[in-house]
Image 1 (cartoon, one colour):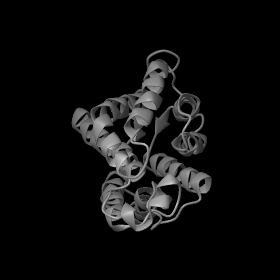
Image 2: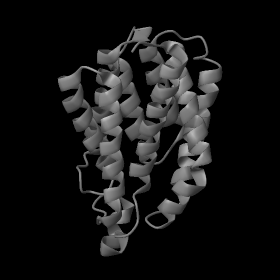
Image 3: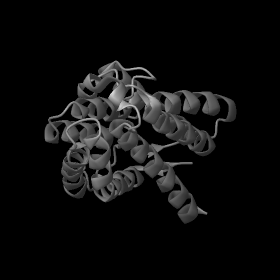
Image 4: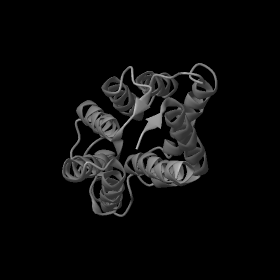
Length: 218
């Protein structure tokens, strides 16, 4: 599978649409654990990214530059703690594919692995802390494991997204250990983490993009 820069731009535009569609849902989740503004925060960040995609990045052919610009744009637009997390992820991912106008299976695996590692290093959270990492760590581990065996990115990514979904859903039964929601203690049990959810939305959007891409190229 080879995806060019215009395909990466299309993926990011699809994330913009998904975040707008799910804005109220993300806010609803966040009201149970925090300020109730996660959906608004994601919307602000991705709308800023959309402006870049339609202007500065519209004809960009460097996949790495596209992702790094997405990261910096999100950081500049979003003041909350999630800003540096996604920024670091997309910048690290961009560095992994810097200078490439077309991405093959190895490139795509390296991009998403770097993305996960970037968020993890920035946030310093682990599985079980009821954070974004409850989605991303299982996803990243499964992607690396399956791709090492199959060398097929699409099938490995699909399995990885399922692992990420399972991780996201597991946050419902966890006690928040990091951030503002940690003050709730056991009262945080029963609510799915909004950060884990928005991370899953990004991953599942890329999976949907892959399926659409495959249909167009068959």
